Image (cartoon, rainbow, N blue to C red):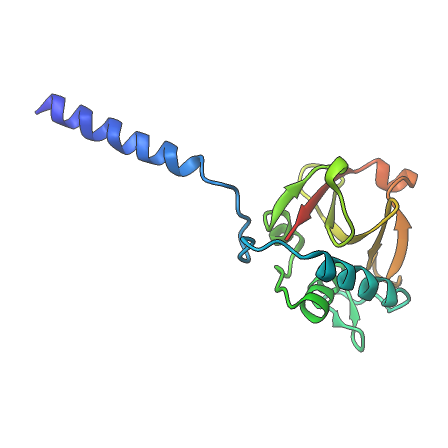
Amino acid sequence: MLKTDLVITLALLWMLTACGTAPRVGRGGDVSTPLSAAQADAVTRHAVKLVGTPYRYGGNTPASGFDCSGLISYVYRTSAGVSTPRTVAGLNVWGQEVYGDQLRSGDIVLFAPRTAPTHAGIYVGSGRFVHAPSKGGEVRLENLSAKYWRAQHISFRRP
């Protein structure tokens, strides 16, 4: 009986380990088909066109204004037909992790002043990103190399 229990336990542990080695797919959407180059270009162009739109906490349309995740959700949905998580926490586990040397336009940029990301934007190329910064601000284009952003932990995700 003891030998049978040991075999069952080992089999269960093996199955759990096998599940843990599956490819990483973020929660919040199917990423089995990556964003095409045309979709990434459409996302980039659309994000840049929204520069100047007012910031509004919880906002998710040009008419109402945007917060950072609302901007990302709106741009991806309307220009690429892709649904994104509506929070920075959701974006942090969505899609695939991308490293700086693999970065391309249309990727999502996440900023963590401490441990967890609290802000996000859309990378548009040449070290720049579009984001909805904060209360009283407006959607703007900024450079990742600016002192404020360099002081944060920056990570990237690709749908």
